[in-house]
Length: 477
Image 1 (cartoon, rainbow, N blue to C red):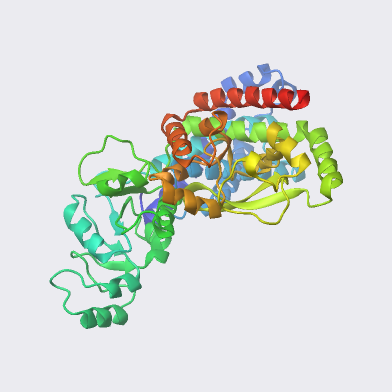
Image 2 (cartoon, helix red, strand yellow):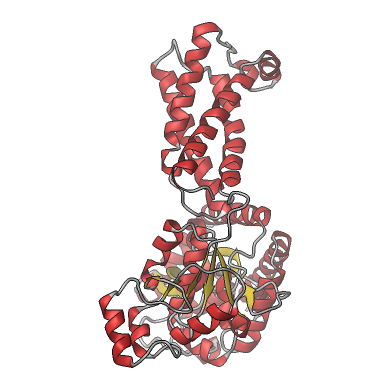
């Protein structure tokens, strides 16, 4: 990515230039003729300006659009999908601003037909521009840092990898715990050095310390980092996945030692000391289709099931008079947490983290058993899908208290954290539950590796068919 003022100038100039080009093209005679031939736009008045009026129209449009993009002129690493989404939001803001100007100023407004035609052009061209300029200029070396909580692992890995590193992040407490290499001297000398310069000055394998783990996001932005090498003593800790989450949010590549490859999602064909972590395994096109389907499915479900929701609310209240909804903290992407909502199917007291079969659970209410058999207790999770905490298809969101028990029983459990949890998934349609964690993990990892929008649709059809069969069976019994 171009840094500093070079990025600011080039990004702003690109927005202004593309806006001028878009308005000029739309105001040309061939495009105006095309607009008048369209069924809907043909009803709008097409009044392409000329002379001073045309110049003023282009000037106003350029100022408004360029001003709307002010938050994006600051250089900051972002994922491609985030860059596209943020850019398109800015285009929509500018479009509404231009429409408002046109409403209050009839003389110099952008004609409605022109505005409607310009907006799609900007929605495509400006995201493409910001994606293009985020590339590092040809000839500039890759910028990489090493991040970890184990000084010995940091030193070993920094000396063993071939990519150039310019610094490292490590907690001060970790540096004070253990001596480092033959040049570090006594523990007392080490503690004195670290205490004297808590945010720098302590070198490992010739690398300058850039701070502790809490500074990772600031360092990624300040130094325009391309790659993060993770050197943690254990990969099942929150700090490890916190670093992965920071890389995910800022569009930075992540690498780990091949000895830790079973704790992360990788392409599987890497050779050498380091392997690439597939932080964002979804293809861009599939990601857009998946999110669009999630929104459409959740909205349709919440609206279409309103009568069922009302009946369930009444039934739960008549059954024991307790609360309608049950909330629980579940694990999401990279070990983060969110509150999941379900219709309450059990008495509130006596919850245990150990998973048990429904037939062995005496806390389930009479209404709750029906809700569980028909899967109707899951309906409130459509809200979690709508707001983006979950997806329609993915590994089941596990209770945070239960998660630690399952991690202890199975290796590679954390690989499930690389995709959003889902309402249904490969394990769910095969009736595999947390009571069999190894089989559940096998299905979940199979989904993670095979995932695609087409595969999601097959699982959704299977789940709908399964739910329909369970509802019919419950009615019969």
